[in-house]
Length: 330
Image (cartoon, rainbow, N blue to C red; front, side, top):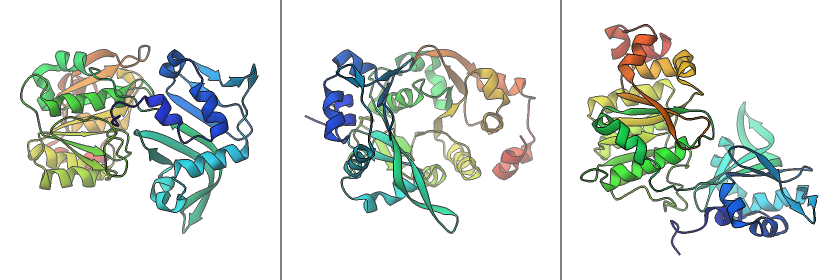
């Protein structure tokens, strides 16, 4: 069975310690399908999170408590019994496992010269289940149409389906939705889009997608421009000055940028400094707002120019030419 065909819940739960894993596997299939996070906390019940509720894992009618040894064993298994080889990911606070699932880590930080060197005394693990939803971007592509070539910013609150939508959007563009396949460079800084494991993408991102796994976004964008001649650059969460400079160069190279931003509403997006900055960069022709009440659904789509008018209109030519100044004007 290929990586694209495995049941997401099973592969996400596979590194959990056997005592808890077998109880997770015994859950009804429909319950498994609804879960997007499995959370283990020392001395607390194991919880299963869906977009709209939190369930407690039970055995014999009693809550299943995650003991210290359960987390220690699960952590070793998540690291493939080689914690040292995952130090860089651990410093970032998460590990990507087979299947493209991301495991967030809570514990005690070990600092060296003011920087996190590693994490010890693991107290919580959050397994975020990566699901590929084929066709998730159908509605968005239909509504945006040819404006997709002007760039797209996808906004929404946490856990509303932005990453799932972005993943399918990259796949469809790279496979030829509505025409010939497009060259898509995926800057997968956190490993959530492609879910690359041992160099092999666990998610299907299409025929003509090039994946830059765990590259910092700014560096990855510039690398893609230099070496991959992309028509589209896809990444999560733009923000820093290096990202903005890279996007500006991408625009000059003729690549359209598709990215995401956290915002619970269009009003919140327009209030956020990061949102204002991205709009003023003029990297996006449209902004799509996710529906907070319906996972994976689009609530509204706006022309970026109309939103710019709402936040005060035009910025100076100098601010556009200099992304450092641009980042500071908002």
